Each structure stands twice: as structure tokens, then as C-alpha cells.
Image 1 (cartoon, rainbow, N blue to C red):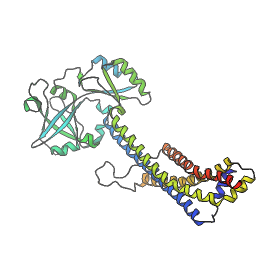
Image 2 (image 1 turned 45 degrees about the vertical axis):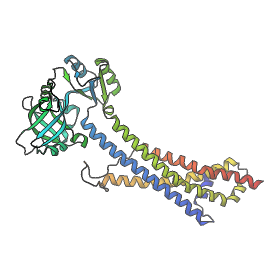
Image 3 (image 1 turned 120 degrees about the vertical axis):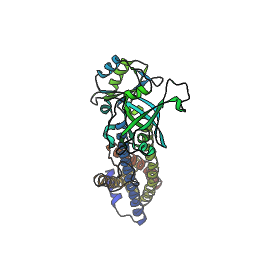
Image 4 (image 1 turned 60 degrees about the vertical axis):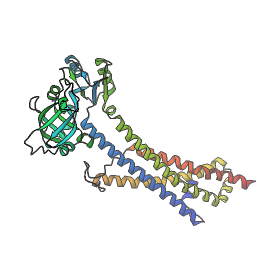
Length: 406
């Protein structure tokens, strides 16, 4: 019954045309803000998925490192234990170090990453080769795979270059300063492939074979930088990590892909909630129209309120009717906003109507991903703000009848 009264007040013509105008302005304002919120969330979800996908291509599911220092000591027995742990699909050993890549007058500071043949099982770097091939070479004839940023920095073309370039690595046995030539080991390497994943990686990393890097760094057979692991997604990740930690002990640090990039993922979540907070403020401003429309409606419906009170309606009943009136304004506006935004997002997903400017990104259109949780959050937000906005005029309506009664 309360909802019926609220619906009649919503759709009926008011004696003062301004009430109709303000009511529909309220509906329109809410629709625009809701549509904007859904679209922003969907685009943010699209970019978040894209970035996470890029980092998934580079980082393994789990990385094992030394708890202190740069050197990870793993015996063959420990490696075998890791490989035979339930839920572990693949294990790759790596050695990393800062290096300098020199090609004539061009040079670039890079991170050289020596990997074994199992690296293709734990990461998708090989699938991101854009020029040349994924060939690591051997310890005496090393090949390197470089990022597109490094390729430009050192001025090398992996498909046309016939001459090797020079790689300088720290000499761990030298007593000279690392900044001097005497404090470095050098070797001629062949650039054979270029990868493109994401700018942070493309401008930093160079891949080669593990044996070569260990030889250049004078690392012992049981010394590595990281042990990277591919996990079975059907088995609980936390349970696998607990098993691995019990095998290795407390001297080893295990990090998931999320933990390896915790600052990135945390920043993305903070950005999303900041956007949500700003949009909520805009929605609250739009809700002032609801307050104005309902206040004017209360003044117009004084006679109706008197009649309802005479028929036995309580203050709470009157208050609920006008609260429902505010909810109806928000539901109609929010419904329009959700429908419009969903259509826009679906068109973007299907036809890529809105393009990204610049042409330097991996895709040339805004990525979009619709999530049910976003719709629920938006609907709850609109409902709460509408109830808060309608509370003041609804209370006024309930008290108005008391003054007329007296």
C-alpha cells in the first residue's frame, strides 16, 4: 500500500510544474552518474585484467629466493623435492644480475636473466617474441633475447645484425671498483630475439641461458638467484606453499605472483576506490535534487497527508511513503543509467568504438569488462544515498501532519 501511494505520487502530474522538472532532473542526474560509474568501473576492470595478464606472462606463479642476500642455495635433492611436491607442475632455475650492454657508441644498463630450458613452462616470455626467435644459445656461444626498449637504446636490429654486441657483468673476484672496466667481465653475445610485454620489462630485461650467467658471475653449481614455479590451478595455492615452506625451511622466502607485485596490485585497488569515492561525492550532489523535489512534493500533498492521517495512518506510515518516493526516483534513474551504460560497454566490447590515442599501447581500444559485483555495489550505493536524501523531507512530511492536527 505504501509503495502504491509512492508510485502514484511519482507518476502523477503536480500542480506546480517546477516539481515535475526537479523530479526528472533528479532522475536524469542519477542516471548520468550511475552510467558513468558503471562505465568507469568496467574500463578500469578491463585495464586491470590487461595489466595482470602482462605481468602473468612475465612472472611465475611462485618465486623462491633467499631470505637474506642475493644468492639462493639449492641442492639437487631440494630441487627434486620441490619438483615432486603435489601441485607443482614445473620448476625453473634462474640467475639475475645488473649488467651493461654495449653496441658501439650505444649502451644501456640492463638486468640479465639467465634461465634454463624449463622457463617456457613457468612464464610466457617466449610467446611474446615480436622479432627474431627465442634461442638462448649455450654457455660458450650465448644468445640474448632483449626487450624492445633495450633494442632501441643500444641501436641493434636482431633480424639484420650480423655482429655480436658486448655484455659487461660484475666480476665477483675483482678487487677493483665495479664502475671500472677492471671490475667487470665482458663477453660477446648474439642478439637473436626481441620481446614486448610491458614497458617496465621491455626497458629492463635481457634473457640468456643459465649456464652462461653462472659462469660469468662465478656462481657455484648449487647457487642461483631464484627458483620459479608453475602451480596446478586446481589445487589450493596456500596448501602448496605450506608444503614447499616445510620442505625448504625458514631460510627461504616464497612469494606468489601477487606478493611479487604487491605494490602494483595495491595501487590498482586504491585507484579504483578513489574513483568510487569521487563518483559517490558527485552522486551525493545529484541527490540534493531528490531533497528539493520531495520537499516541494510534501508541501503540495499536505491535504493528502491530512486525509491519510484521518484514516488512521501513523507518522511512520507517512514517512515510509515519502522514503519510498525517494527510492523510486533513484531506482528509475539508476535503472536508466545501468541500461545505458551496459549497452555502451557491450558495444565497446563488440565493436571497439572508442580508440586509445597515441598508438603505443598493446591494444588500440579501451578494454572493458563487466562484473556483477560492480552492479551490486553501484545499486547499493544509489539506494543508500537515496534513502539518506529522502530522510529529511520524509521526516518533515510525518511532522507536518502533527502541526495541522494541532
